[in-house]
Length: 203
Image (cartoon, rainbow, N blue to C red):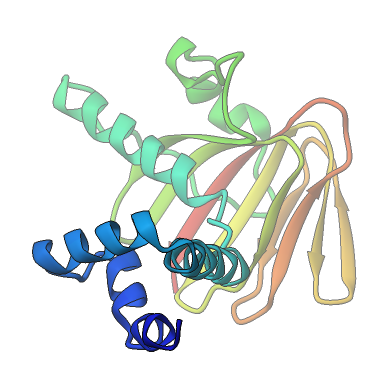
């Protein structure tokens, strides 16, 4: 028993579970575990500990990243098929939803019935400005911009943009600009998805 405890404490269990053991070491561990239950228990306990640590340190992926990556791929594909770059106007306090009708009415710029909770279609991209149509079902998580100014024109639905302790209620036709270096999040307050023109301008 003492010899087996020394074997368990030697580090070979950890090496085996982590997949770092050589083929001969792995065979040895498996053969010993087959006849010594305490080795099997040690393997199981270390495996469970690793799993707990992984869950504790897990980082929830930003739900904005995936839809923007997919939107970028879609935009590149459209350009490769011959779509010419658009010239959407810059968003400002005088912007109207109708200014973007050319893109809002396109069949390929609609959100499919089945989609993730955040969906996007890029209207145009340059190194200075990205313009997109975005749909948000529930919320967009807190973030802070240090190198780009983010602007919104609400097209459908309603939402709150929360900047630190300040809450701004937005409805169709409303324009809003996010200040640099200010943490903010978006919370949808309507049953329909909140649909908006999003513009990110290099600062």
